[in-house]
Image 1: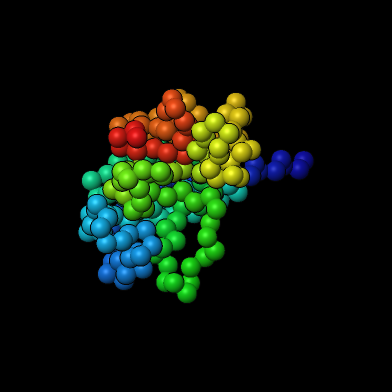
Image 2: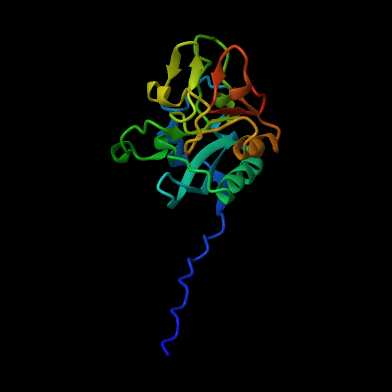
Length: 204
């Protein structure tokens, strides 16, 4: 009698890995003139660079980088651990400005990012991104929408939020709960427009 074949067991996923550290002197030079300029409301000394595990859209586990204010580095690590545990896909999580200028990858069109010293579009007010207290998740799958205006334009395929496609964020889902658990608000709840990619400490 031939014994039955042993079942093939898939290896368990490795545990989440997340670290936080200061920005190095060399990285500070690469950032200057890119995501940080003289006159920004936050000094680079108050930023922290996180390296975290995440799932990409192919289901592969990668190590990504994101920069936030030092006061929220631990809570943000907790958020990314929750997203990892739920295998929420992120197309790209990287800080392109921290590559040497001659080694930078092509500008990614769908990067998840946090710190960027900039003002709110059409305003003289600093964005929460300028303080490292906001993050945009999968901008293509979660675009900024105001009437017929959609940013980025590739996000037009995702304006219909009744769709449940990989990388999309919906009211009350695990991604929203991950951020609300640390007290952050979601731009998908705004009334005058919708910023489905956006989470921030102030909710604005």
